[in-house]
Length: 506
Image 1 (cartoon, rainbow, N blue to C red):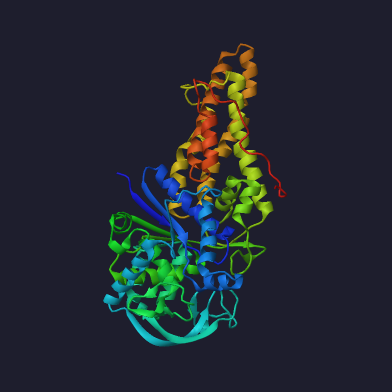
Image 2: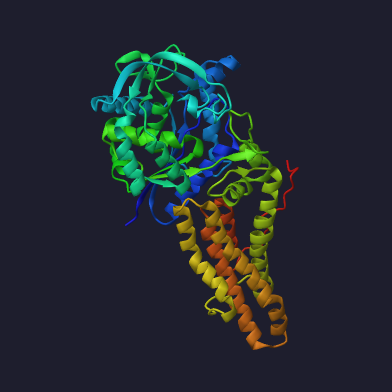
């Protein structure tokens, strides 16, 4: 029986165009979704945009635009990442426009209110607009936001609060037991430490005045709007028609064995503490997995809209192609730790891995089949003894890739694939088909049989690579499969998979 697998990304603010840091999360989620589909599982992949933020209002004011106009323009740019990044998301939710969202947020609010977890009180605190979050003095770094390095605003107003403190022990038990799984372990331990230090109730609304009238009004209190994080976190269920507990909600959330959130380390608290507590209050199931990636940097500075350090993924794809960009994100970014991006690193990885290793392998194999067997790949030849390392690597790779992806380790998964590429290239150099062909021409029947066996093993290895790499580089996988699949018994003529690229490519 196939499993059901629901995977989501965070939804970014749309105060500016998308950058490479969010592209990383999209591509990671896409790989997980494609891999699960390839295994025969039923998959739903959700992404979208967080429209109801004060940051979006301020960005619109700075441009002299109505907020909805700026949000519409930038949200369209995020949705348009589908083609350049070869994404396979099933649903895209926009929190300011999607009719599913507001009604779902209102239902979630009322459910928590019915549990006695919402109350109104006077509040004064230090607020970072970039984070859309209050900070204590102790959480600041030299009086500045630790995430954005900006001085927070002092805010005084009446807000609605959520009784987070009520859920401290339950959250700790859920995470410590692994029922709410957080990967990698360093982030899990970070969350457990945060909870153990004591949870304070948090503000879940803003005044209409401070929100500039932008956002979802609090049910029964139209002078307040729902806090952007409460609003945004709800998207994971509102996109499933949580408002009506519809069939999608039951299928993909209430009854699904895997509910997986991908997110960056800067928003762990919201997803691993606030969001599960809200769901507990509402009497709804929690996510099963919270998978956390670190940041991309450029020259040591975090790539983000707030810092002004931006690398445009669409521009990168236009210059270098989709698969070189996807490959760098998947092959270079570690499971733990930030990764520094440069164009030179992308070019080196693409030329070394894709052009030299994989592209050259497939081209050589198809060329040899044409040169030595008129394009007709030998079959049923048996396994040569000296192909054992290659066939072993091919046999074990699917299991290793699956285990690495389950551990949220894309570098490990790509390394498992590359073990097959490396063994195949070693095998070519070891058996030297060109020497076997010369010996065959001299009448050596053993050489002819060995050449058939070598070509058979290599073609099968290339087909296995097409299958393995499909979730990671879908276009490349399709081209490998096409080159290694006979039509009327003959392989297509060889065509290079990857041209060499240069840092100055345009």
